[in-house]
Image 1 (cartoon, rainbow, N blue to C red):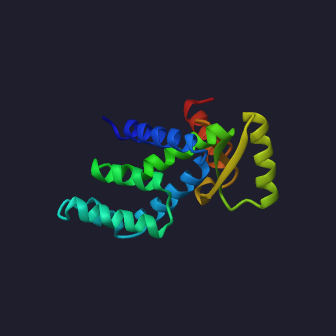
Image 2 (cartoon, helix red, strand yellow):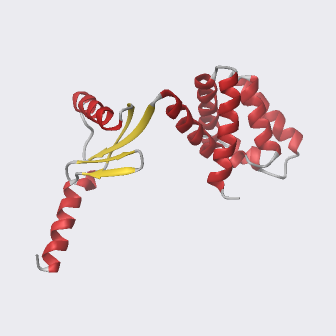
Image 3 (tube, helix red, strand yellow):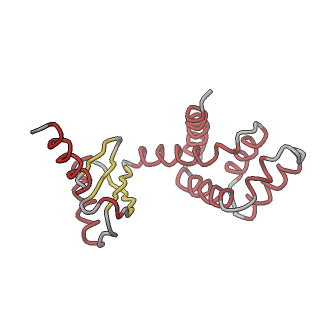
Length: 180
């Protein structure tokens, strides 16, 4: 089974359990906190190392979860992932969970790449325009890439809107090469 399919299945199961408890936002935040601790330390190496007994790894995972003040639901999910040797999928599970939560809340994430950081007023105008386009609340994820030269590239709901100068130059180059 491919990683994406597994991640979606675990994320959906966790999301449905969190919905039953009416704590979907809280559980999502908890999983994100654990992912941050898991990714930015030697914790991932210790928890996925088969040289350590499963019981020891599970104790470490539970203690870290308690330190982060995670709910029993989140702790149970992490324990299950550890027992089934699926903890390495946790970042993908968290990402799928966020998408499910955004979908339920009528939100959509948009990635905005520009050649230089955009001003807050420009980001607000962009957010409003994208909200009108999608019909949903838009959460912007701004990034910078000096290679764009100018303009912006927006990824929204699986579509790419490329208004970068780099792309315009590449298109002109292609037209010139074809003789148009």
